Each structure stands twice: as structure tokens, then as C-alpha cells.
Image (cartoon, rainbow, N blue to C red):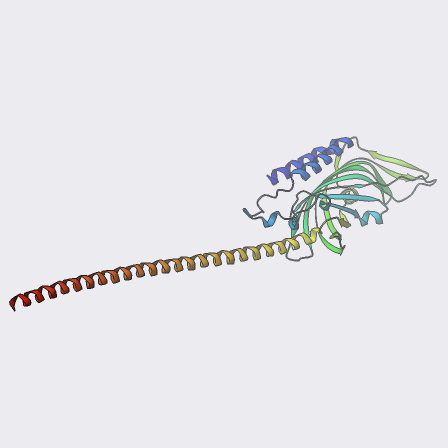
Length: 333
């Protein structure tokens, strides 16, 4: 079921490239609401018939499932950006997240034409799966993303401006930097992305006081321009992430602690069960011994009564015989 949901989400993201901005908002709100209502059931991970995994130590509230992030590389290139990431699951060992980020470079007027231009305005949707390795303070992730927006990039003699759409994959790691007393944390995220870029732009050059357009495309076409590939794919990301809940890098660490508690709990229950079974067996042995003792006492009492009865009967017969012998002796005299 989880794979089908993720494939459906990927198809929705792919189809959402050609949609308008209000449609994006409806899709995002729908995904967040559906994940908040039904995302807490991580099937295949919760052992059956155990109440330990239902406590609050192992679950995340709605607020703790939200993370804010910003890319430092974009800020270095003077492109403001902000992103939000939402965990698609209520359990704190859940690996799947949904992300939404945007870059917005405000335009400025200048009397002179700038030689270097780097303006990126786009929105990016991503689905990410974390994989926690053996290191307790690092988490690796794989991400599939889709982006759509406008660009105006000129780092040399030729510039490119227009619309773009990007589809690709990214891989990276995340590590904690600072943890607050309320269990929130600041993490450092490093990632590399690669993907395809479809651009509908025009090439221009600086011709004195004006820009002269050299070529232009009519619709979105696949481009292999390395400058656009790096800029539109956001190939290098060095992000600062603020987690309202437990850090993603530490969630499996907490999971290990919970597993250890669970193992201790199972061990204690086993010891208790064995102790109860041993006490029951000892009780049964005592009852069995008591019944055997009562049966032996009954047999002994029965034998004693039989012996007393036999002794009385023998004494009566002997007394009668003695009386008969005495009477015969008196008659003879």
C-alpha cells in the first residue's frame, strides 16, 4: 500500500508541472490533510499484540512532523528561499516525507544593465525516503523532485531567461548540529541532485545599453545547457533544517532505545511468565503431595479401624469361648 501511495504521489507531482498555481495549493493541502489523518499507520513495522508501541514515546504530534529549511547556497547567490518538510507518518521511525520549497528573487531596477544575472523563481515538490545507517548521528536519504518556475541566468557573454521545468533525483545526508531543551533541533543537510530540465527560454547578449535576443524557443524543450542544469536542478544544496520534533538523524536512535526497551519488556514478561509457570507447577506438586498424603492417611485410618474391629471381634470370640469352657467345667464337677 505504501508503494502505491508513493507512486500515486509521484504521478501527481509529474502531472502538476502543467497545472496552475491554485491547483498546486489544492494538491499540497490535500496531501498534508490525508497524511495527517491516515499517515500514522506504518504497516509491517508494529509488532502485533503489543501495547508498548502505542505509547506517546513512539509517536509524533502534528507539529513535530513539520520541519523548516533553507538552502545556504541560494543565499550566497542572493536568492532567498524557504522550504517545509512534512513527515508522512505519525510514528517517529517513519522514513517517508513530503517537501515543498520555493525560491523568489525580487527584481530590482538599475540604470545600467548588469553583466552577471542570476534570478531563479520556482517552486519545488519532493518526496524523500530516509535510510538510517549504523552511525547514530547521520541519516541518508534519496529524493525524487519536480520543479517549475522562471529563470534569468547570465554568468558570461550569453544569458538565458524564460520558464523551466525540472525532474530528477537527489541523494544526501543529514546530521544534527544543535538540540534544544524542548527536543527540537537544528540539522545540517548536504545533498547532490541530477535530473532533466525542460526550458522555454530565449538567449540574449549584452549589446551596449540593451540586451539583444539571439535565439528563442516556442515551448518547453529538453536542454543540456550545464548552467541551466545546475541552476534549475538546484544541484548542490547545503541546507539548515529546523525540526520542531525529534531530529530525523536521531529518530532511529530513539527507535533503537525503544527497541531496547521493548526487548527488556519482553524479557521481563518472559521471566514473569516462567516464574508464574514455575509457581503453578510447584503449587500443583504441593496439592498433589497433599492429596497423596490425605489418601495415605485415609488408607492408614481404614487399616487401623479394620485392625481394631478384628481385635474386638477376636476378643469377643475368645471371651465367649472362655465362658463356654467355664460352664462346661462347672457342669462336670
